[in-house]
Each structure stands twice: as C-alpha cells, then as structure tokens.
Length: 216
Image 1: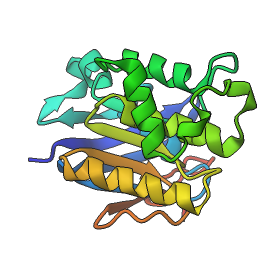
Image 2: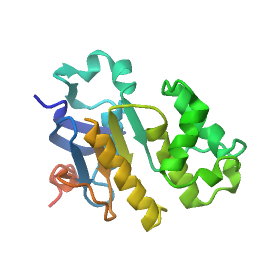
Image 3: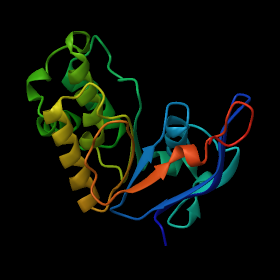
C-alpha cells in the first residue's frame, strides 16, 4: 500500500480551476518530482499536500487513512519549504532555526539548529542577524528547517533557488539521507537536482487553461 497518496485531486484557487483528476502515490523512501511550466499548479499541489489548501475534489491519504480525518496529525508529519524564506531579520540565523526546531519538537533546539547549519555548510552564519544574510544564505537557513527537527514528509518548492553548486550538492545529500531512513520527498523544480529513482509528475497533464479546458 502506498504510504502517501492523492486520488482524483482537483484544485480550485479563487474562481480558477488549476488542475483536475490528478493522482499520485509515493512509498516510504520514495521521491516525487513535480515538473511543468509556471502556472501549471506545482506550488498549489504542494500546498494541498501540506494541508495549507483543501482540495475541491478528491483526497489525500497516509497509510490508507484519509488525511482529512485528522489534518492536525498530518501537518505534524510535514516539513514544507515554500518560495519565501521565513527569516526574521532581527534574529540570528541560529535563533531563527531554533524557533522552528522547537516548533518541530526538537529536544535541544539550539543544538539541533547548529547541527543543521553545519550539515548545509553554513555554521559560520549562526550568529549573524537575518537582515545581513545573502539570498543564498537565507535559502540554506530555510532549508535547514527540515534537518533541525524530524518529519517524515518533506515538501520542497524550488529548493535550489539562490543555491550555488555546493549548496545543491548538500541539499541532494540531505534528501538522499532522508529517503534512506524511510522518509518521503516531494520536490518542485526547474533546475537540475539529482534525485535518483524518483517518480515524476508532469503537471501540465492535469493543468487547466483559463477557459477551463485541459492544457495541450
């Protein structure tokens, strides 16, 4: 049985039908890469998976149980990293990350924060206020949230934006390690990220045009 699955999902944002009749499944240790042009619904699907949006039709399940039956339980198993870097400018990188680590249930948030920064190659930014971080440093800090506290499901929206080649390599290593431990990763990307043996979902197969017709 798939660990995480969606069946006949339809997404409506405002009055716009974004995609329809979309299904997927990802086993423990698996990965799903979302592909498609801007506007095809990649970010909307990730937000549905995270429980931040409700599907207009269809549903999500985890180990066969409907996510809608206990949405709070589902949100507790998710790390979602969106386009915006959630960095408080007055807090240091370590303080920013320790906040997220504590929210995620880390036993020692400060230690977890430092360990996560180390794994992503930026321990030197620990005491730098968020306002002084570069775009790439902010991105690594935001991605470090998934390492600072455990969660089985990682949902990553364009995670390589603003990362250099070394940063992308560290992200790829973190994803591989998470999957090796039975974790699941869903990633939306336009860039070249190595996610071995990942399934792909072409969003334009399910996207809907402005007139309500399927995209060609």
